[in-house]
Image 1 (cartoon, rainbow, N blue to C red):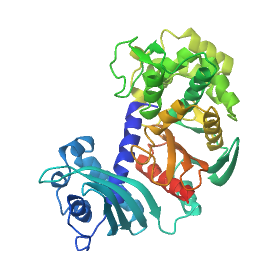
Image 2 (image 1 turned 135 degrees about the vertical axis):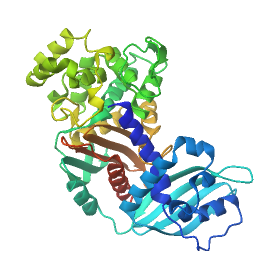
Image 3 (image 1 turned 180 degrees about the horizontal axis):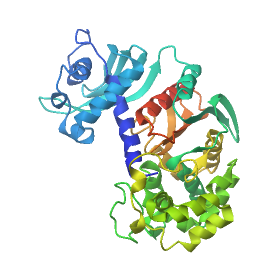
Image 4 (image 1 turned 30 degrees about the vertical axis):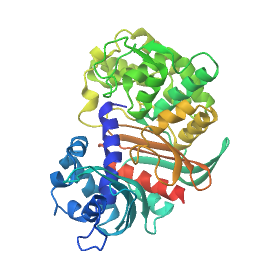
Length: 438
């Protein structure tokens, strides 16, 4: 929902490769050390056990992207989930600078993409996990860990066959949960539908008309900056840019997005009607609109829409007090965007049926669990996540490389009493995805 949560998701996904997969290697392993890649692969355990300095191992470009404190924090969390690293099973490179490392942990084997820069120091410029095969893992084990989380949860792993889905594992799949920015899938779906109908083109240029708390994509951009619809879609999905989101809602039509949500099969569409823009939600959650918030929560769809329309010139960025972004969760059970895991799966089915390569490409920019590009077992992997204090939701649409079958993996976690742990959810969803890949 806000840029800080999205940044956290992207950072966790980016570092999980480095941390989860690399958290291990023993200094006495017998891997060959003929190339810069081999030497750096052989040092991974020493790096993650602090026997090699972070600054000596990583290139400055990597250190800028992932500071040492962040790297250590995520590494610690991932080792807590997957156990201590034990050994390098295999290190493979074609050019001596980039390749793949299979790193064994107590609870499985991580596949790590490792890249080494030029020069005498040959410091590492890229490190990410592309897959993690947990030893003796199962849907039942992951389900038990999700069920033990404080608050409310729901998840679904399902194989897709046209409009049908066959659940492989689930719990609380019909439970309505706050989903943060995952609601933006419905906007992407409606945009793709309008393009397919010939009403719009991806290359159409429109003004960035509605400002909100945004990602680095449009932060502090002048109002009405001209941008293409494809750029707005890419920003909205890949970095959850809120100004792009609100601009698209107003451009496409709030009621048309609502109709698309209903048509996609949302089982409790009224929970999201009227379909709030991000700045409206931010404003209503804050203390500047306490009276309006109480009336909104108490009202039916018609009353809520009238309140939004009546206050259109007040529910704007300059009137947001920022209280939504500090302290604890605020009104996540009554003032949010909601969907069940089954609803999200149906939204993914509707998006895929749209047949829009551009929409699917937007979802694949940031796959949520492993940086750029699909993880190794997948020929396609698209993602949308969302969060705010007390809320996290992660949803993936993937095509399995081995047989071309399509799958949805989606999970949401709400806790009205405290912030939720992003790295915990990333680990759980990554395990679900790995199990689906089998």
